[in-house]
Amino acid sequence: MHVDKNLLAQRAKWMGTLAKAAPDELRSAARRLTGLPGYEALRKPETGLVMVRGRMGGTGRAFNLGEMTMTRCAVRVENGHAGFGYVAGRNAWHAELAAYLDALLQDERFREDVMSGVIAPLEERRNQDRALRRAETLATKVDFFTMVRGEDNDA
Image (cartoon, rainbow, N blue to C red; front, side, top):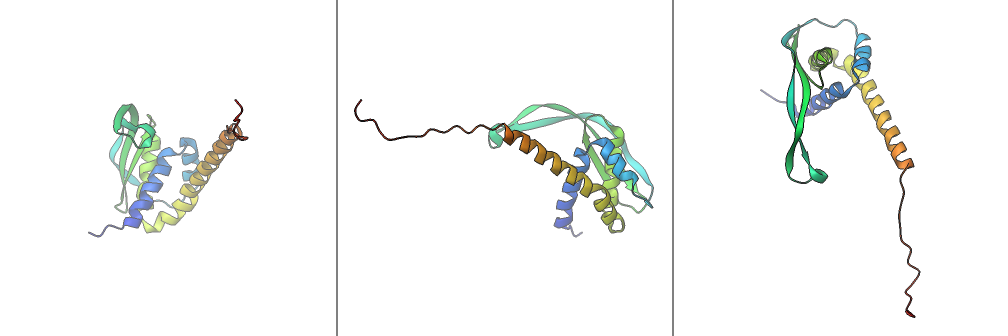
């Protein structure tokens, strides 16, 4: 079986976008899609705990930071594609909708509509939020520097 590495990278990106989207924004964007197939649950939404790992400074040795609540779901659309949704927290319908959209995105017939109608607006909103936070942070930045005027040899 041939694995398209480009599609795997795209899928990782869209799954992240679906998982990090505000649930109401995701639902609103998905409602605008029409003519979509039905689906069945392979694994109904279930909530559990995952271990969150961290690194000091992003480069140090990995350590267990603590546990976090996560909800996952798996569905299969009528065309046979399986989709998976993993979201932080306890939002079962968010995980189910993310799984459904993941399955649709794997089908070339629906990919462009879902990318342009759901993924692109969510990514744009997220980029705007990041830019706003970055601007707010830079507005409070203080640069400290020391100016040397020469050496005082008379002391």
